[in-house]
Length: 406
Image: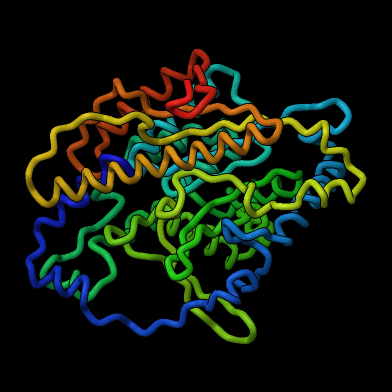
């Protein structure tokens, strides 16, 4: 998200004082949010056990990881090799809005270098939720990634509401209907079939959204959803990606109808980056080692490399802030998100050091000075794409620690 938030808040200058009062204190529509005791036991579009709440151990996700081993055995594709200490690759893609162009370029350049591995597990959040399914399916989708992050400008992705007539009675400054149509174009039935096929081989794809009622990151098993294979699965798949990329206040929330204990509720989901800028599953898989050993597998030989693409900066970037509300607000959020992202990177670093992991980090270098003139500026996005491609095409120099521990 980074600098792009500044453009969102520039748009807020158009709001009158009356609109701001209505926006924050106006009447709210009646809702029926899922109660906390039911959050881990809901049915969504007829599917159960397709998600977990970050910070809470998940029995269904642990069982699914056991199933993962069984799927590997049937497919003959052994990413986890307990006899030969084979190392497997994980990929975590962060948020960053238009800066996702950097990650798209890096993945394209990585393919060009012929050093890009096939990832056992891919996670994505916010703009990373759009990148992750395409990265999961491999380099054949690199052209689509480039297309997505170099072709569309702000007007193609969001539509600003009328500040005087609409905003006081709505839940966001802009509507993401244009983005919804783009997601429908790219994420079709054929792509869903391919993700389902990889899921059945023992690979996993996860997307994160924020349940705003619960103040928790929700981790969705996108491969399992894809494996359902029906129209409801396709609609839910698209909704989750849209929700993960929907910055609250700026963009409208995505509401999901769920069922629990014979009752129907509506959940409000927004950008996963509200809780985390990048994530993995260490907190929901508590006790996995024990569960694996009970299956007679020796976890001593499990080794992995985790690659993290941070679609943003990891360094403090100096910038003189104009003495006006929109600039101060934008810069404040920019700074908070940057600080949050550093904390998330340190969590992943500790996770790898406590296990047998190899930590690898990429992020936009501080030498790149952003020149975006709007929220999604195709000129700036092309520059970021080219930067990522150039850095990775000859072998990316992955950082082995988070910033501050060099």
